[in-house]
Length: 475
Ligand SMILES: [Ca+2]
Image (cartoon, rainbow, N blue to C red):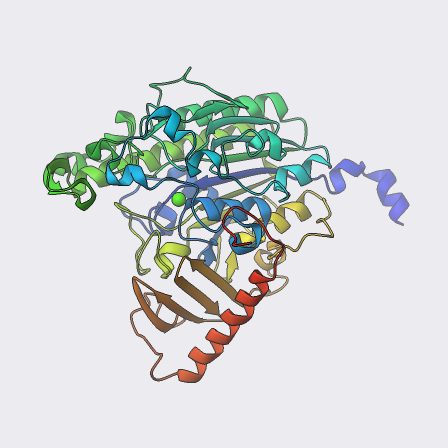
């Protein structure tokens, strides 16, 4: 019977390995998409993606800020397991210090990186004949042995550090844009979202006939990493999309304020409306770029065989809206960790549905390996599972626990219960009845609190026993 079936239908049509387009935005708020309830931010293309796919409302990342979250996406492992459990960044520019070039080269931002013993997703896909490209934010190390081409990617155009000015592509005055293994300033002055779109569409034109992995981590709507406090106070949007927000343009202006780290000096900085305007415009520009990538998948008639995943690398900061979640970027409350996520795979993932299953970015790598018909490596512990059967309604989510640690801040979710122990606030919350984490139930539910603490202790023990991985582990 099977033989007859194979004779009647070309094997390729039965189950071709999927193409992947993985789109990650940077610091986008939980509500900062039309399809996640924003009445203000214009995201027609992401809304289209949600209409054609499934929207995930309880999807978490592994860390409330950039670098470790991105490390987990590509390794499928907790930050504490793969060794990147803090930022690869220098704090000194935050305090107004400007590095001399030679001095900067020896700082952690320039020498830190994802442990080379970690196996990243594109490396696994390579064995199955995939071509992989990354266009946008790398954030996992600058030395050649850490750069995308050493980690399985075939092409790279983007910035190596954790944030840049959208136009100069500099990080606190230092050029950060690379093409493959070499720094480049060839496109200085051009809005970077346009450049990532240019490279992504070029990649698709060249490679749409092969199985491909297109990783598109935009920097939008992250703050510009500029030494000038007026610029660095927020994102940067192009004029073309700013004009779509006339109410914010009308209110945009400046205000004067001090920055503790810059001393007593008064700085003229954008007011709330001006910051929101830049932020909103940067999202809408990214949305348009995403639309052109989706159009190209249609044009090449590969959309039906392409798994498109979108989510934000962590919760929204500054000018974002994380409603109804508490807190934001950097925090252990839901606003820092729960992010908007959309998954589209025509015919495989239900269209126009919303899933409230408990899922995380640890599920991304196993899902992609399964979709690409690549066996997971046997000697590596992965922390997630294939989430497609959950979206297909075949099985409930296998995830019942999730753990977060950022320095001394801790977050634990077990079932509907969440325990937060952090410098920004603490408590035991029932997310089922209190999504905003307003009511601390630790006094009335001491047994539940004890149970969550025990879960955390077991996880911590497991992470401490994991293979030693750099650069943060104390070994
Ligand atoms: Ca981020």
